[in-house]
Amino acid sequence: QVQLVESGGGSVQAGGSLRLSCAASGYTAGRYCMGWFRQAPGKVREGVARIFTGSGMTYYADSVKGRFTISRDNAKTTVYLQMNSLKPEDTAMYYCAAARLCPTGMEYEYNYWGQGTQVTVSS
Image (cartoon, rainbow, N blue to C red):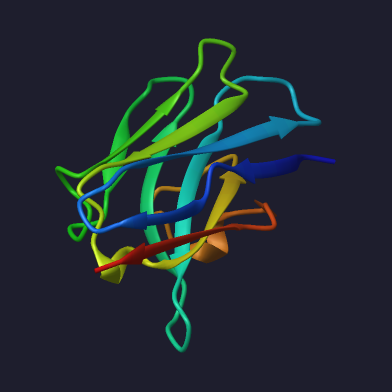
């Protein structure tokens, strides 16, 4: 059973930075697709970024391009989301997710989810 544990959330002022971590266990490190999603109160959950742990290829939502960076460690069991120039609209619960394949990055492609970590950005 794959388990994902997020950490690194918190409260920051607009313009600040946070780094989220997602530690994965219960699977053999290899070619997985790891994604970060977020859900603000009253809104649908949206994909933020994803990375293919084998190739390192990354994809970003337009709303975070140039501000967020997704990366993985060499063991390919921890994925990070570096968030810079944070805005109040980035406030949400952030979730890590894993999938064997995620060609489109849509929620339904992901089999495993973490519990989430809260990010709050004040103006």
